[in-house]
Image (cartoon, rainbow, N blue to C red; front, side, top):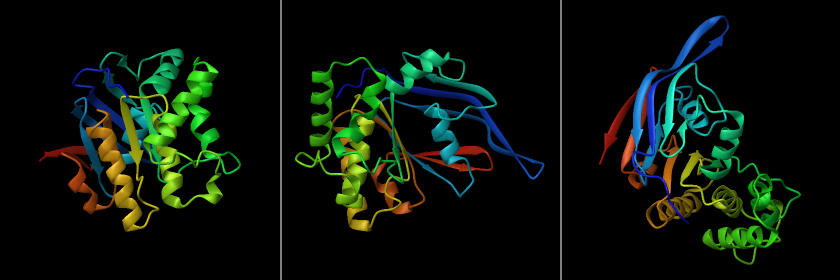
Length: 233
């Protein structure tokens, strides 16, 4: 897997996001500034509703902001990018890992991992090789024809991680990836994520409510009242 962007990978400048609930304006992200270097493992912490997932979704181009900039090294500002450029960003630069796995139950592990490749231009042979490499990377070689109901929750999360890395993105965004897992399985998933970060050079941002997960990251970003507090080990 390659990490082809140079640091700082992400520069967030004066990022603002508001929601309206029951006629009241809620400021979730209040002109925040944040730098994330290539190869960093960053934990996003905060109470429910503090804006952790919102920030992750903006970085993943799933959500938009009211104002500000999100500058990706080698790509530019994703908030002002065209739809075509954003499609390229989603396909080449960023991979998503979700708490609920988001797998198609009728698809095999192989077919689930293949989904991101359907939006690119890779050949059938190259796609097959990428899928098999991704499944092997997450420890699921030999399970490619199993469907989610035939797999454990930990294995389903590994399929979801394989899907996220099949395009070899330099950036992974993980939203509570251990939230539905028992402690033993959660630790195994974290060890896999640490390996992707340390061995493969992937930049990793992870949302969590579990303070026991902080041991894995070198930087913690706490969200409260729309503002960020950064702590580094």
